[in-house]
Figure 1 (cartoon, rainbow, N blue to C red):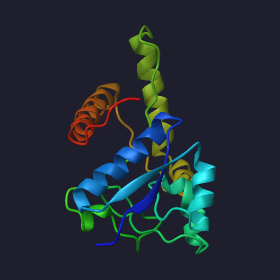
Figure 2: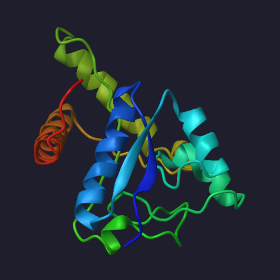
Figure 3: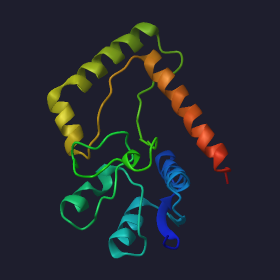
Length: 178
């Protein structure tokens, strides 16, 4: 087993806070010693990854896929449940760390007092856009994003499940807010 592996982490946004949690969870599951290296932002972290100052990063595919395709970075794995269609030769971590899956996602919300009929119209139109093949191609080109149209009820259920899942991870890793 090698010594600690320097893994970059940023702490400026909700999305960037998830990355060190993904990494810590993978470290726990895989038995790998990852040492977090804090960065102020993704560009500096990616520059240091490319320069060899850190050995690994957990980053959205959109941030690094160009470097992977150009041969400047080697993708070790994707954290999604299945391989990415954009990088079909790159395994999912779950293939060698059974049960591991960590995906970023985005949802669209509206103010609490938005009338239900407006929510229905928005949901219908957004889902129509997400089902469009040209739109899906653009999401894929942007870095492997896969839209999953749903209803407001399905999104609430998904958020509750994600909150429970990651709450368990945070408690197991004894992560505390600073």
